[in-house]
Length: 368
Ligand code: NAD
Image (tube, rainbow, N blue to C red; front, side, top):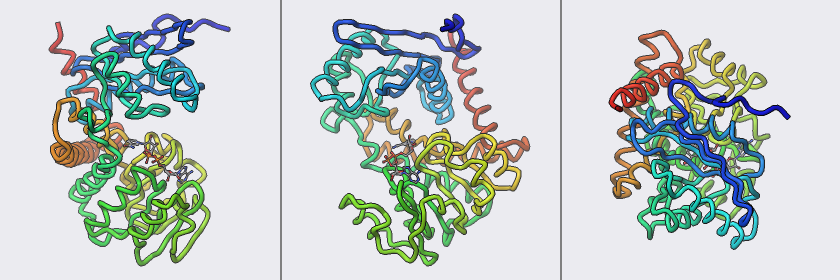
């Protein structure tokens, strides 16, 4: 096996620290990458999975630096990974997470948050050991981001900003949403309340559609009973990936990475794509959409509701203050990014990345 080159991940922004942690007594194997803390303490998820790597951790930590900066938050980026099965018995999981927390207790510029394989209870254990974490239970001052629809609220704000930037009205706009979970369901509800018509939604099994508009309350009831969307009353039930060919003005991929790719990009009919999931389109698909005049608001601008919520929780703010800030910031950032993309004849993603890098560089310029 070839050894990774020393400082393999280093560039002008970071990472500041790459730490591998082992503790034979608790069978802990973990890694922490603190990418950049110029803007403030780094917030980033703690992921528990068997198949992660330090390289992936570094890539996700950089994504958090850019996401927090793009959202205009006084936080840097980091990520941690615990190499373990997240579905192990709870006492074993607690032991492992507590051991991880004690191992990173001294890295005070890292504030862990929930990610794949960890939840608010895990964050409560980490805070108990270290005094810090976000994504906490409400009794510990947490703001439950999925319950308040933080990311869906942000997506609706992004739609409003894109409407103002392009002149495409939201009232009457047809919306298709891939993924009907915490993100997709709230996006549907907020957009419907703004006058848009939700014409199609999909989950891991099926796509349901109705050109006259789906009844969101009925879909909610189906999901609340743990049923699949295909069991809902709808005009049409089709294989899940037909969602991408829906005649609509707004398409929201809110399920999986690389969902829009070379196999289906030509079928996309929307004028506006709001990226609810992380990296839901391949780079080539995004480029193809841009070439066709489709506006794509990139993930780290459109789905920033969650990180804004975490920052507000960390600052001790209330749920209503967090909601107001999500709307204000995602709206402002989407508008700025679309405006800059037009002015510089570039993609919204390139404009967003430049904006984020500019903010990180400025924060770095104030350091000793
Ligand atoms: P979730 O688990 O609550 O919901 C996911 C939904 O996607 C489910 O309805 C599932 O059935 C559906 N799904 C899975 N595979 C699918 C497929 N191939 N086609 C169609 N639907 C499919 O997850 P979530 O919290 O809504 O997150 C969705 C995505 O957004 C994830 O990639 C997540 O990383 C990202 N994200 C979430 C947040 C947040 O606040 N929860 C913030 C930013 C980004």
